[in-house]
Amino acid sequence: MTKAGAKTVQEAVGAERRPALGGQDMSARGVKVAVLPPANRVSLRVPEEAVASLSRALGVALPQKPKTSAAKDGRTVFWLGPDEWFVFDEQGGDALADCGKAKGLHSAVDVSHRNVAFAVSGPGAEAAIAAGCPQDLALAAFAVGACSRTVFGKAEILLYRVSEQEFRVECWRSFSGYVFGLLGEGARDAAA
Amino acid sequence: MLLIRCPYCEEERPEIEFRHAGEAHVARPSDIASISDEEFEAFFFIRANTRGTVYERWRHVNGCARFFNAVRDSVSDRFIMTYKAGDPKPKKLPGV
Ligand SMILES: [Zn+2]
Image 1 (cartoon, chains in turn cyan, yellow):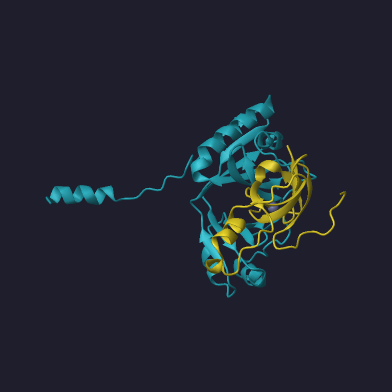
Image 2 (cartoon, rainbow over the protein chains, first blue to last red; image 1 turned 60 degrees about the horizontal axis):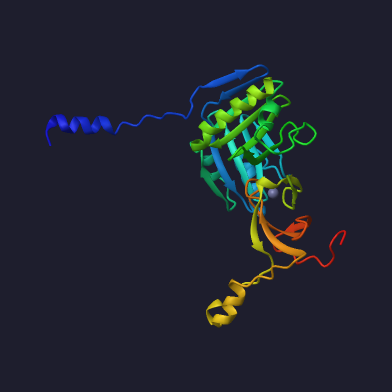
């Protein structure tokens, strides 16, 4: 191989991280849909006897009640199933490394780059999500802090109510174009 | 849309979060290699397919992702009750 050829190969292996839909947003009257910045995410499975150990290691008590979440210092934990949680950290903390400090048996998988998150906010946020989500999103049924794995149109999402008028929607990266598009449609319908 | 009560989420959730997963309480032979072809056929292929009250496995696939059991009416499609996987077949059904 010539010298010039070797140089081309070296340049070609340089990796560039491109977040899906990075920085995009859309607004309709009363609803704003924004693509959130990348976050640290962990998919966590923990048997009952190790819940206390993992709660200590993460610095957040794993919520025990269905559809509830817990948050502390920029780190949020969703209850997803009887032995399953979803952790995300928006302040640069390494949740996976913290899980590694736990003595209790568990399975933790870094899924930071698997998901894309959207913030849906404004007085029409609930209606915009209801356009594709069959769950009861009224405040009485889906309170502030409530979270659930559910569907949005044909895609699976994680839904989290940040405040009365703000939701966080997480989906798998390859569904993000579809979810963003349908959220936009929902937002326009909610505004109409 | 049907509302199905998930025994793990402890509330009724929309049917499109769920997936049907066949007949419930089909016991797997403890030593599957020692059974005859006829016994294997009965275990693996033959289902009761009852008209009326049926016991089924369901999975809350786009929810808590857990399997559970449901008692359903195969004529009206009405859900009679649901219970956790591993629980025994209920002896008494509500409203039946
Ligand atoms: Zn469930």
